[in-house]
Length: 389
Image (cartoon, rainbow, N blue to C red; front, side, top):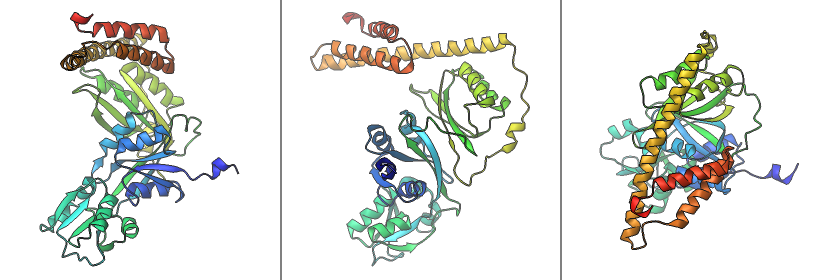
């Protein structure tokens, strides 16, 4: 066995040691993970991207609180891959100092999502103030360091053991099935050779045009191809009041009807990003095995498909104009700020950097870098305020 195969994986997670994300990491890696605590979800993705961690664990959904949008957004800002998912039961305990009592608590600290999961407890204890902090285990640590027996925390029993606290009450969550689903993420290329999965799942992120029926056109493709969506939600897009849709599909989209469906979706959507496939969490059966029995209508006539593709191109063209308008606004703002500082309205060094970056991105995307560089030169010229052009 090589030294690399013996290496303990470093796993980044949001929170402090003893957090539920830490427990999820230990579950996935069989208790052999070296935890890398991070303050924010973006710090988790930065740690994996920058090499400070080999993997990351991000909570994406809770049975009571719903989607963890900030974690999903942090993932979608990167090109990290999803290696799998793990589901952990969340059992909130009321923790206090060794000399503390349940009745003597005046404040209870925890992560905002954990507080939402224990509403009934606080409704029954109007004398207790709920205090939001950055993490459940972080709240436990603050209680241990603070030394105030009237201050407690909502966290796991693992956190109580780690920080020397007493468990005053158990199972304070509003429902006994309170659970959180986590994605295990890895650097690009880590899962490229993924084989077949018993219960495959794929994350598909797409943007549609701002016109009637644009979203329906994409969803109809999933239905016609018998591709079951176990989850669909919208997240803010790159411009104000625009959106990207995040779908979890219970299928491997690399082959068969899944691959054909993705080709159709790419022809209808403005942008499409695929993460996966990866194995659905152990013990979670595919939500609808009957989806494969959905009859697939005959393929549309090629003229109809051509028209839909042209509509998608028009959507992209309109989005480009909106992006150019926003870029011009920001360029004018940058010029104003530079003028206020007395350093002139245009920064040639910055423009050169933009062109180099455009060529680099083009090469990564398989586009001719010289042509893209020329296009960006024209964009820079277009977005330079008239008096400085």
